Every structure is written in structure tokens, then in C-alpha cells.
Length: 200
Image 1 (cartoon, rainbow, N blue to C red):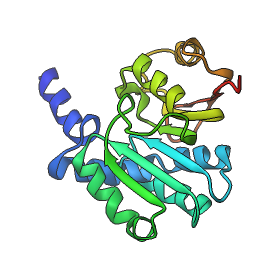
Image 2 (tube, rainbow, N blue to C red):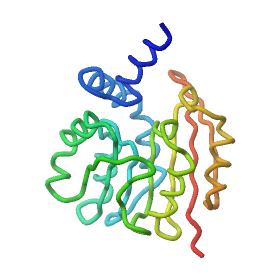
Image 3 (cartoon, helix red, strand yellow):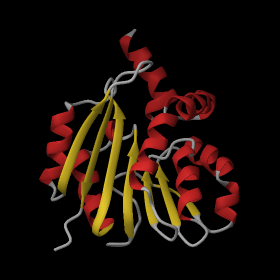
Image 4 (tube, helix red, strand yellow):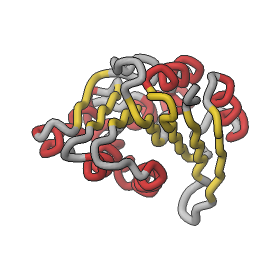
């Protein structure tokens, strides 16, 4: 019975696909909205910035980021789920047509971005699905010196402690690592990690 529940959950949220994935996407769009807004607000990206969104899901964060960096900036979204890419493409159709948003098949450890090409890397409720060491190393690679990494995740889905996550971020070379655990009334606390790629 547990394995059946795990398979069902995976189809909705872990590796969303088909009709369950579309239903999961609608739930994510609503349930993650607070964190998507927090992440983009925390970055406060200027017009013209280049951002990478890892595991973009239904595209709420992509749309928010595009509204900040366009018309001259760029937001690249990577997600291994074809269902999520379809939902995000529909949500961001105008920004895609304007050349501000690009959506591609990918994951934390295979973004397809060039070295030092991004001003920020953002992950909302996705880090628990990463090969964490490989994904964080990829973030270091694609960020420009001084670029920001912003991770936020529901405490109840994170597969490690908040402190361990922050330590993993520091271990790959990020500096100025900050950790916040933000209580919420209607959900488990939001774990929020912000760090910077060294400038030297």
C-alpha cells in the first residue's frame, strides 16, 4: 500500500505526468505562490538580468521573474517533466513570444546554461528532488561572480534538516549563506536559503 501511495504521489508531484501531473500543477500553482513571490522579491532582479529557474513547475515563478527582468532580460526555466513544461509554456506564452522566457528539458545538474551566464539561480520546492551536490555545483558553474542562489522549500517535503541544506550550499563554495525558517499559518515552515557565488 505504501508503494502505491508513493507512485501516486510521484505522478502528481515528484515527476508530474499526464492528468495527475496537471492536477498536481494546479495545486502547486496555488500552494507555492507565496514562496514564488518571496523568491522573486528577495532577488529583486533589475531589468535586463538573466535568471535560471530550476524545476519551474507550472511556471508561476517564471512569469513573475519575466515581469521584473523584461523586456531586455532573460529567464531560463528547466524542468524534467514534459507536463510541467507544457503548463509553464501556456502560462508564459506572451513572455516566450517576446524572447524573455525560454523553457527547456533539464534538471538541477543539467541546465544547459553556459558558464557564468546567470545573475541568479532560483529553486522553489524542488531541491528535495535534486542530486544535491551535483545540482549545487551546477549552480556555481552557471552563476556569474557575485550571482545569487535562492532556494525555498516546504519543511515537510525537505529530505534533510534546514541546517544540513545550508551546509551543503556552503560546502560547494557559496559564501554569505543565510538560512531562514519562516513560520506559516496554513502550511509547514518555509525553509529559505540565500547565498552568493564568490567574486574572486
